[in-house]
Amino acid sequence: MPGQNRIIMTTKMFDEEVLAASGTADSPALDLRNLSLSWRFSLQYITVGTGTLKIEYLLALTKTGTYYNIGTDIGATLAAGNGFLNFASGEPYLAPFMKIRITEDGGANGVTVTVNLNIQ
Image (cartoon, rainbow, N blue to C red; front, side, top):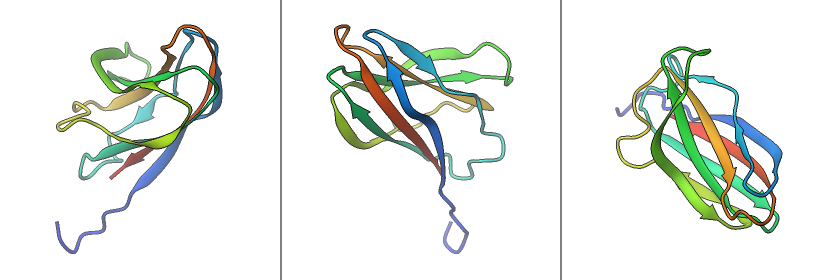
């Protein structure tokens, strides 16, 4: 809304995380209950290496509960480099807790990954 303070919060979800070929890592849980006013999300990623990267999100009702993969990739087969990815329209689905999952999806080579989550 015009005139309201629309702060963007950036959280480092992974910092130079090393993934072996076909490796997977989940970020720590992020409590969304008081973070997002506009429910707008994007990711900034940096990859180094010859592998490729898939990024997806997981949701849960409690911080220590079961995290569900709803089957939506934020990005897949991302080669070495960097960029920004927007979540699809209407996503992420409304839930109090989120994790980001990264997977080396090329299957042959490793990759080093940094991911920042931007929330407004």
